[in-house]
Amino acid sequence: MSGRVLSDATLSEIARLRDAYPQAESALLPALHAAQDQVGYLSPEAIADVAEALGLAETEVTSVASYYSMFFLTPVGRHKIRVCTNLSCYLNGAEEVLHRLCERLGVSPGETTADGRILLEAVECLGACEEAPVVLADTTRHARVTAAAADDLLGGVR
Amino acid sequence: MPELLLMKYAGQPGRDAVEEYVRTGGYEAATRALKELTPDDLVAMVEASGLRGRGGAGFPTGRKWRLTPKREGDVRYLVVNADEGEPGTFKDRTLIEGDPHQILEGVLIASYANQVHRAFIYVRGEMFLGYERLRRALEGAYARGFFGRNILGTGFDLDVTLHRGAGSYECGEETALLESLEGRRGEPRVKPPYYPAVKGLYGRPTVLNNAETLAHIPHIVRLGADGYKAYGPPILYSVSGHVTRPGVKELPIGTPLREIIFEHAGGLRPGRTFKAVFPGGSSAAILTAEHLDTPADFDSLAKLGSMLGSSAIIVMDDTTCIPAVMRRTVEFYRDESCGKCTPCREGTIWLSQILDRILEGHGRMEDLELMDGIAQQMTGICLCALGESVPPPLRASLKYFRDEFLHHIRAGSCDVVRTPVAAGGARG
Image (tube, rainbow over all chains, first blue to last red; front, side, top):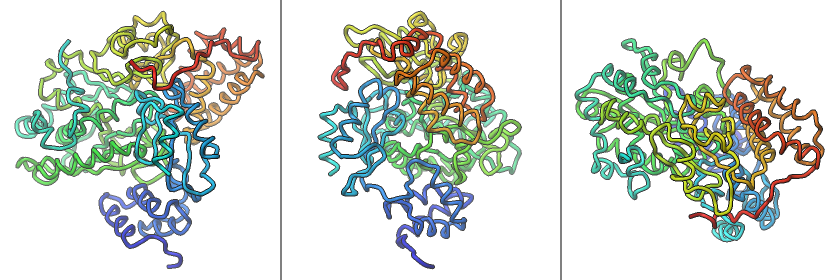
């Protein structure tokens, strides 16, 4: 096996996931989450390891991975800042927040900072419209974010 | 007003701990269901309650359960749709984060009623906190014997698996969700002939219910169908946008839009006037001030050419540019379209191109009829509800706010007074 990148811990997690479903294919999304958590993105080698662990074709795994917006097939920042730009957030100033974050990070939505650390994304409804505008910084949701609050939020991520 | 059912404890600390849920009477309904009631009793009870699916389509839950074949020895599954993603909707997330055992108890009762021994909860990928709370809740419930082998000594077995999505609005569509749960791209299956009830997960009969729908079940069992109905029956409205007290409002179904927006959600910010509302998520035809006295229920909203949908009420005041809102709406469906069927894939691209040129000051007079024509042609021929979601709000906006579109085309600019919106600061 050439170019194995997934650690023993990740592979044993994938084996556990495979056995948690009636059919191994169902473990694909959770397995890809596990692989991406370790590697940072789904490199061809990571895809190959997942495919082998679940007995799937690499092309199949790539096809599935490419469908979902939370999976990345190219390197991205380890930290992910997701700004909701859907209706309720849009109506409550999400554009200004996104603009401020773009300025501060020197990126456009969908890009990773020059130092490779932070990915900024404009995303669709995060289902927290009562807190609009909402920003998800890694796994933490921030409510009623102002442009000024966006600056503070960056401090917590850096 | 009667006390709250679903939201009574939501958001209080520690609700993901099984001891806390049990302390307030949790799992008593499930215990009674498993020990004293038959599966048929439960299906009849849910049918009598009038509960309709809370994911958006509003299909009667009891009928769905009855439609699921229950031949002895056949494998059946229960799949919970917790992939909440309809813009403006946050009731499932609120329940999942705020009182996750309520949903798990619904899963247990629904599984017993449908003689299912394997359930999956498909949780939206971005719902990090919710997943964590559900995970902790499920772990605790297993430890107390509410899941696993020989539950409560009744001989009934049930295993529940939490499954994380990975970022796709389309996976909220039930057949796309099943595809995704089977490890594939989230593209919808062609239906008819086979609906999930008959041929769902792994080709087996599958009960597919929304997370909120299942949270109603313990209350129906606890109160009985009539007792439950005396609460309205209750429904969770997600109210957001330009209101001072946004949030999930548990109210009797059919509460008028005006009361929901102006009493329960605090009304508009000072000095602002009401302009329009999405009464059922961004897939619902928008309504205007003249419709505010409409009861927010399935039939009343359908009569207006709109829908209750996921009961997400997005309020827009007079600072809102309707063509810009429509562009954002169409862009969303364009980006989330799985691309499998042509009218959705191409229609959303064409519409967003036209809206772009109108908003950039290059609109043409014929664009309004062009958009309406594209919307009409998309209607009824898309594979799933995603493509079908675009025409209603767009056509309604062209009908009610035609002058605003015309102004953009004629003047090349917006005539909405854009008062700066103090993000976050204006909450009452």
